[in-house]
Image (cartoon, rainbow, N blue to C red; front, side, top):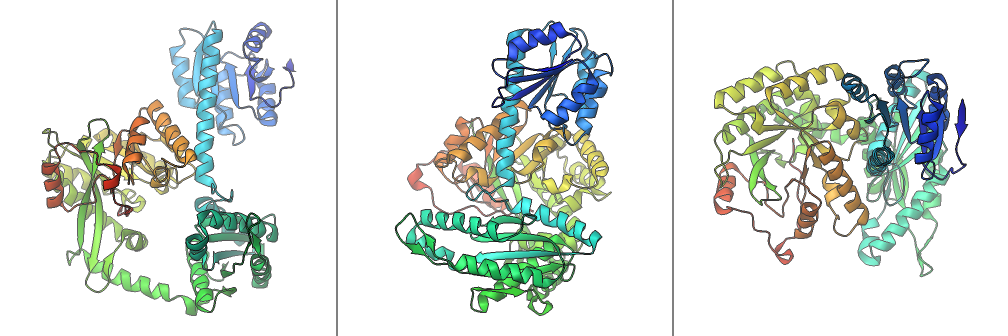
Amino acid sequence: MINVSQDAFDKDTILLIDPSPNSIRILNAILGEEYRVIFSTTGKTASVLAKSEKPRLILMDADLPDIDGFELCQKFKNDISTRDIPLILITEPQEDEGREMGMKIGCADYISKPVSPAEVKLRIYNQLRLRRNEELILQRALYDSLTGLANRNLTLDRLRYAITHDLRRGQLTGVMLVDIDGFKLINDTLSHDVGDQVLVELSKRITKVVREIDTVGRVSSDEFLIVLPGLHTTENACQIASKLRKTINKPISINGDGEVHVTASIGISISPLDSDDFKRLFANADVAKQQAKSGGKDCYRLFTSEMNDSVHERVRMEYHLVWALSKNEFSLVYQPLIDMQTNKVVAAEALLRWNNEELGSVPPDKFIAIAEQSNLIYEIGNFVLRTTIRDFASLKNSSGELLHLAVNISPQQIRQPNFIGDLEKHLDHDGFDPCRLELEVTEGLLLTKQCQVKEMISQLHDMGVMLSMDDFGTGYSSLSYLLQFPFDALKIDRSFVDGITDVELNETLATAVIAMAKGLRIKTVAEGVETAEQFEMLKSKGCDLAQGYYLSRPLPLEGFKAFLEENKEIVVPDTSEVTNGKSEDYSM
């Protein structure tokens, strides 16, 4: 029997699956006022309802007449259309084994019979609140908060998919990078509010010009990236670029107080003509955009091989990178991590620096990608682990406690078969307790070769090494990985921390992240803390650790030791004493 409660379609929908009509009546009475309740007495019908009605939550009895409840739960979790719906299992009081099985399958929670109205309401409320927090974080991870367009991560992901799809069909994929000329001048002379109005209006105009199948994303303050799948000729992309240029050039009204005129420089690259790698295609569009700017702006340029001076620069950098280790050009600095409750230094993050005689100081975001692509990353990463473990072997804080050490690990590095063995050698050589070592990984590590990665992470976990999710909130699958892998900590990305004291959304997101982490018994680390207000705000939300220029810049080993001596306890300075300098990310 299938029935639906009152037509309160503005309420969250709950799907009840229970073989007993009497139980359904009781649960409907408990939930009917707050939720839109739909129900089924069989697993077969419930499967149809779950797909068609897309409930916010499923409340299911483990004992069903036509299918084993655990089997049905597994089906829900295996189906892409229902796998993200939280499921609460109703079990007999002594079914510990069944509950354990349900949690392993992916059930969000369980309730024992006989059900208590208060408990049912509380469990459902908690799960729906967690779901809303996850959606809030997901929205931030996928979309630009100002324009509502796809953000950089989502746009590039769609580009990667489009290239793969079009290659199979023998079609072209266009990438168009649109840069607003002189946008900084608008912000500096007319205010950032006016700049925001301009960006919002331009995002609407661009969206109207492109096709429905195209993706428009905002990838930086004044840059839009457009993915054009299913092209037949390069002329198709040029036609769209020409229309964009005309619509962007039209005057923009600013709150009835005048008009702003803007132009754009547009770079275009085409797959597979220029490259079938989405990152390279994006880089090629950027090269073409720079050519449009240097050619006088207010125009578009197609990428050509002659433009690609950046490739020559990359080859030059790779040449020097090959010899960097043997010439002792790498060095390490350490940025203190502060316990926000005790104000004591309890750990430090190791950050890699490269200084070359010809190239000068090269930031990691320039050379790490080259090291990864040229297979140099393993030796460089091995150097970092060996050096940092030696430096921190017996290093203690002012309370005489051995300090913990956080080290960034490249995905290519940890996938090497010798990684575990080499790490154990370094730890054994200096008598370094694995429990003091925290390896920071990004989502990129977890996206491919799942079996190999899971086995490697399991070995690290068994050794006692801690695992931290770096740059949390910048990848769209991070939430699921917190449940799939044994993470001990997550680092709140600086984009959450920046503006937390004056942007309500940032505060809400940071609060949701910290609360979720606490629920999962995972510690939180805030990076990029720049002001006293940020520090106090994060502390009040229950964040565990903090790092950033407000507390200390990254320091060479001797400077870090001196910092430990001089700072028995971190004294939070007045806001007026804090510089306006922003932290640089020197992570490897």
